[in-house]
Image (tube, rainbow, N blue to C red; front, side):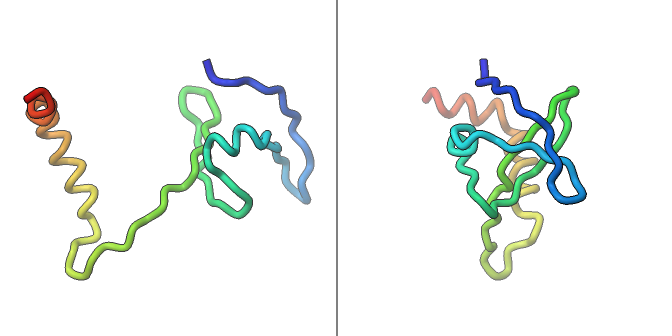
Length: 85
């Protein structure tokens, strides 16, 4: 079970916000100035560090990683079989 800490919503300028304990930020490797993604999944607030984007070599299509992911999913069972060889 994940660590649970009670936090209070607070006024930050014209917005509302929440502070996060440094122990949680350390576990996520989040520091001041980092960008995060905030979303709601199954009624829960989820905060994730924005992934670092790599620069693709010249000539590689912008959707390379999307295509790679699709191919990996299409051949998932075959790949699992190769691991055990």
